[in-house]
Image (cartoon, helix red, strand yellow):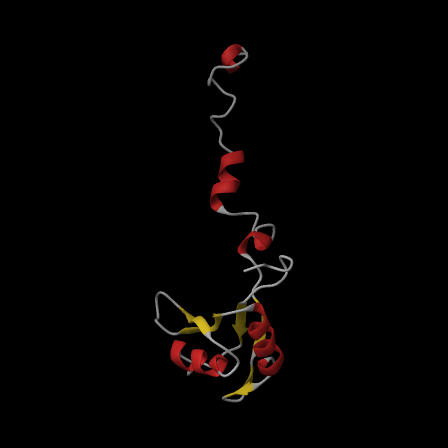
Length: 123
């Protein structure tokens, strides 16, 4: 399959979902536009309740776009849902630049003190 530019994606973000929505009902909502590869409502690990958003992966970017156009802003149980192309994870790294690993690595007190190198930091 030939991808026409990297902006074409078949993964959809669905937000502002009522807690009544399940993986199955999410999948059936999108299935009328084309084959759904996967549909997942994100759940809270501790409480087991819906976090109010999920992701749907469609068979092709074309059907994904059709579903977004048709479903964005649709009312589900009185809530107007948000439907948009899912942004790739890499793009959001700048926003959470304070991840534990990246932050502590630059602030380690043992770097440059007695770890060899020029004079071993004895001066």
